[in-house]
Image (tube, rainbow, N blue to C red; front, side, top):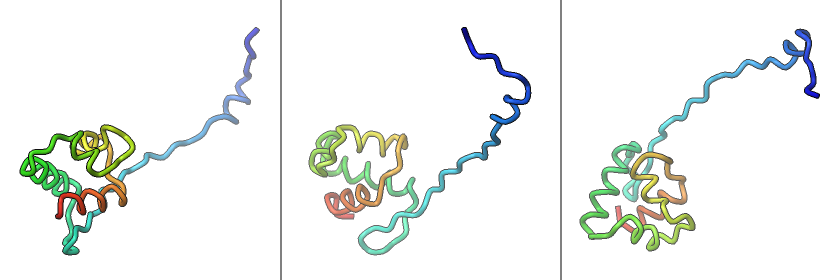
Length: 94
């Protein structure tokens, strides 16, 4: 039989939530130039196409454990971590 709640218990369980805001922090490349996430992604796509690499080929070259890391970064599903950014900049020689 389901537990019945009275109105006092419902008020005790009420919790106010504040919105979570993801901030796009700048990325620094090799020359210590500041790039936004959008600039970094467009530069990543451009350099990858110049080298004639697919997303999966670049992903294996970077040795990321997840197969679709580059795809997710390029489609802005995920933001690159500091390690991923550093690895991509090293491999593509930004």
